[in-house]
Amino acid sequence: MTYPNMTVRRTPIDPGRTTLRPPKLPRWATAALVVGSLAAGATVGLVGRLDSRVQWGLIAALVFVAATYGLSAAIEGRRYAKDRLAAILVWACFVIAVLPLASLVWETVARGVPGVDWYFLTHSMNGVLSWQNGGGIYHALLGTVQQVLIASVIAIPIGLLTAVYLVEYGRGKLAKTITFFVDVMTGVPSIVAGLFILSLWIMMLDFGYSGFAGAMALAILMMPIVVRSTEEMLKLVPNELRESSLALGVPKWRTILKVVLPTSIGGITTGVMLALARIAGETAPILLLVFGNQMINGNVFEGAQSSLPLFVYEQWGYGTEQAYDRAWAAALVLIAFVMILNLVARGIARWKAPKTGR
Amino acid sequence: MAKRIEVSGLTAYYGTHKAIEDITLHVEPRSVTAFIGPSGCGKSTFLRTLNRMHEVTPGGRVEGKVMLDDEDLYGPGVDPVSVRRTVGMVFQRPNPFPTMSIYDNVAAGLKLNGVSYRKSELDDIVEKNLRAANLWNEVKDRLGKPGSGLSGGQQQRLCIARATAVEPEVLLMDEPCSALDPISTLAIEDLIDKLKSQYTIVIVTHNMQQAARVSDRTAFFNLAAIGQPGKLIEVDSTDRIFSNPSVQATEDYISGRFG
Ligand SMILES: Nc1ncnc2c1ncn2[C@@H]1O[C@H](COP(=O)(O)OP(=O)(O)OP(=O)(O)O)[C@@H](O)[C@H]1O
Ligand SMILES: [Mg+2]
Image (cartoon, rainbow over all chains, first blue to last red; front, side):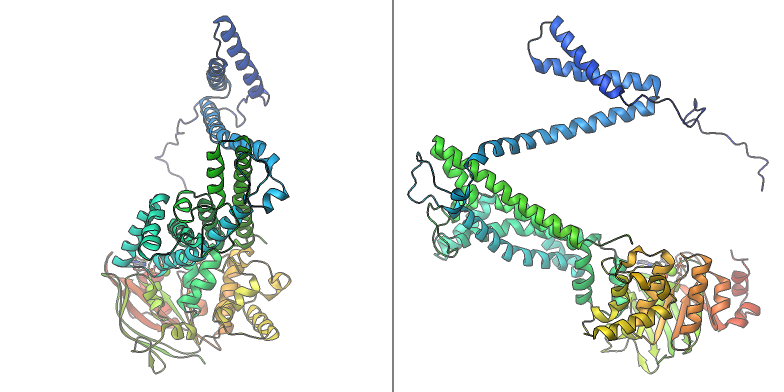
């Protein structure tokens, strides 16, 4: 078919185009530009007698950005120049984001590793004075594991069921109210959760300090995170999947249990583990409710316990060389604990995620 | 097996929007009935009222009667889950369960319902239904692989095998071939022809030749204007609808002189 009245006109998005292979800067150009701008920065710094190396670096960075853009615009065209500019921006942000994190990990590892050994992991601080060597974190590690476990046992089922209710059943007022309160709870500072349990459990109901009291406060902090992340994951499950299960004559509760949850289990696990990592590092409610203890107390339900973050806080407060070492070592163990949990979560997520491909 | 469906005065709503109005027709057992009509006239909606899937949509509401032999689907005390076990459905887009293998997809209707079968029994059911769906030869060596790794046409046949595995008495198919190539389409049409000896089949299609090829009876739906509810214009034997329909609008639609 022909259209006699139509003139074909090309849109001028790329007016100079004559070939599909426009000129490109060689691969070594970036390296050359880095070296060149560093040299430029140093030259300006030396000539201008600037003593701060930070100034040299900033000048070098500016030169690098300007030179890259100019060179690329001249040779490759403006689109590529902008692309390079965006790439520099992304890389810069990445470095800025990673730098504090990497230095934190580096610092903790460097200072913590010497203190961590089998003795440290298997002994308590019972009878060890702040200026003495030795002692360990067994009591704190035990406390953290027990408190986090109990908090999870309380918070995960409630959180999961709430999310399932909100996504699969919730309509109207009740669901809106619950969503609102979950949002409010997400913003509750940990010290407030601690105070709440303190006034309810310890002052009103007259129970003593215990790991369990701390675990309840941790559960309050954990629950909204579990609800939120699970909710988002459940919403991602396509409706067609639910419908095709229902159309097979599968009841709704079985559809949720056997189709919806397995499909989203990977994401849910990740969310739960993030919540877990978050509460594992809480100090404030532990300080209020678990009190702290130098001895091993294996009973979560009675008597003061310790926990890793609390241990770090206490040791730092002593202010002696030996106590600092113990604090760094305990911090390292805490980070490792959280990291192991995260790795386990990722493992589960990968193992359980919907499989694609042949 | 294979039940007769008798619909009378059926109206379906989405919230306040009336999607189809006052539909009365019957579907013969052990035969294929095709629904045709322009997009948006309510074919899918009507199909979904036949196994109580319409009410799954938030705001979905139905008035009227759907008799399955001598039971009203919308009568008091009727369990929608039992209805859906009796009236199976194949959707427009193939949607195998992504977490399950090919084998588990076919067995899904049985397994998800918590009935425990012996392994050999389940093996037989899976093989029988995959064979019936003309898929066995293509997948027999990779039954343990995920169902989402199949081609679109294979996935659709997998979904048909999944629907027949629970042994429904009626099979509803919403444009089962709309995403498929001519060869897969032919495979599915063959399959429909084969299944018709056992099931009551209702198929929605936009493809006139397909309706003419596979169906015994054809129902034409139309809507007066955008925003108006869809209505049944006429239903008759496929031969008559395609050769000598009694309503002008049907002839216009079939011959492409629509609109
Ligand atoms: N989930 C929904 N919520 C609200 N309105 C809907 C919904 N699904 C369909 N409708 C409306 O109901 C009417 C009928 O839709 P339906 O999907 O039954 O049409 P159809 O005949 O199957 O069309 P097609 O041939 O394009 O599949 C349309 O006006 C549509 O906008
Ligand atoms: Mg449709």
